[in-house]
Length: 124
Image: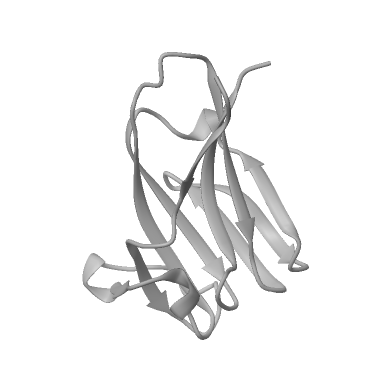
């Protein structure tokens, strides 16, 4: 099996907040974002990603090219990264944070990312 990638450009919800310390509240506070490149300022982004069985052993890697600034990455409510992005590509092994079916990705970004994708990489 070769690696395959799900580009996560569309289907995001946004919650604009002045700082990442202002946490997402009720679902009614989120607004649809047509494409993540439409993000103009700091905000939380949330998206549901559904994973289906692939028939082989795979590891799931979340790849993000975020703008320079604060970045928080959560998968299914678990924080897997909080720090500063320098604008370089970042990779997070989220294999043990995802499951088959629906998974929730939540990100805090200081501006529009260049890329967000979830990759299935064959086990070594």
